[in-house]
Length: 440
Image (cartoon, rainbow, N blue to C red; front, side):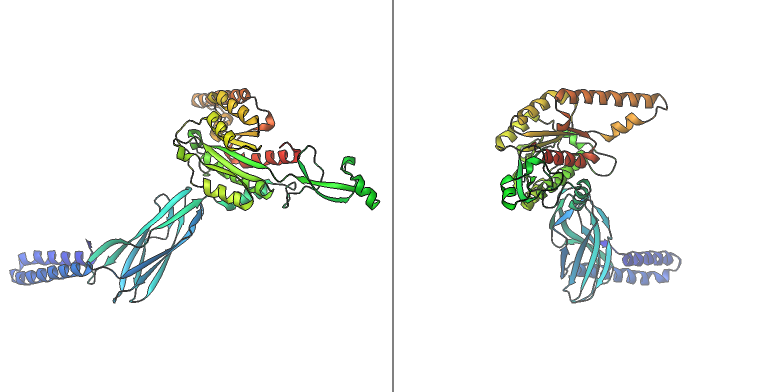
């Protein structure tokens, strides 16, 4: 409880009156009377202010929020007291979020209620919590201001912004991806499912003609195929220290970009009828390893989103071979494995051994995130000795990186080395090419 402006003003007037008594002693009796009355009023007002407030608070906020998007929070205050209440409200929102619209001062009549709305913007993924609201109320005589916390706690979950992920998926996919997952042309390679019979069209391969149906209908009939829909896409996601690197585009860490790319490809794969799953590695504890078995349709996508929304990278070096062995044991059926990491020159032996182990049974695509800042430094013109040193260091780093990638021994179509912003499009293009070729 702190003095209000009214009490401070009264104390100031009392001090002024005390100074006046030095000049006019006749005012001394009045000063003592005023001081006694103010003391009694302040004590009585303080005792009245300590009584519990008959106030009920409700908070309305969505249980699941998208990261980086402004959201409205509604706080309703119900005055169940016999007298009016004047309150200053400041809600206890998560500390690292952005805020607009608080504090807010309201006056509530007896038996009435007031709704206060404000906006928050979650900055990072994961679990968050709203605590009891902070309130500051005036005492009955207005001499004191009382601070208290009351109201419910509210737990929320912050997911990646799926609307942005969906938009990226729609922009990246082209006319080859149909809503039904069917391709209206015969594809080369094996592993394609028969869809239907139709009349022969100019340009169809002779091998696509169904001769029995042709003889029965007395006109050329072709078989139409669709991309096989009963396949598995499994992501091997690095959560180690290198994924902590951040870009200057405001899109978050390398891990955030990798997670968005993962969910984008998972969305397209689910629409194609494939099962999607994931295994994380690189955490300091066994509890940080997330295994989400492949599942098809909306259930598989929801499971990925719910299982990975709160994963954060850790200050640990990734163990590629251990992660590959773990995935081989968990995944008995052949799948398309997408390993997302950040390759460095010291990783060539361990990462190659991991890719070789996975390739014994699965189709492997290794995706590496390259730092945009290094590419930018390599493109900057030389304007002096410091910039020349920066350029030389960037070129040396890139040469070492290229040498490490060559030592991996992966074919071009089985390796992606792009900046975090381009990872989603690159993975989608490789996935669609593999689907059309029937390589899986």
